[in-house]
Length: 91
Image 1: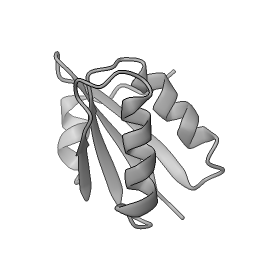
Image 2: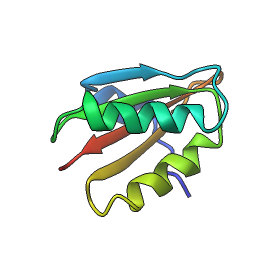
Image 3: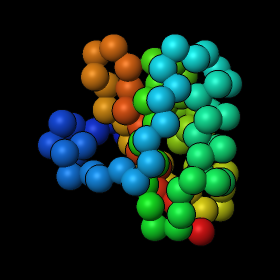
Image 4: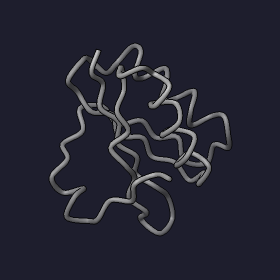
């Protein structure tokens, strides 16, 4: 189950790349995240993905788990209208 972050948690995270996938349904947000993690986010950096598709919560976590340590799903913050997801790239 995806980790829900608190407002205090989110305030401590400084994303390096932000991708807005709000309004897209699955698999749109996942494709946007994968593309950014492969091209825009460098090792050690953090991606913030904005998504209004709540399925992204579990899908993004699963994608990171299957990356064999390449990506780490930090968690998401529910703003009330959309989620802010955070992923750290390791490799």
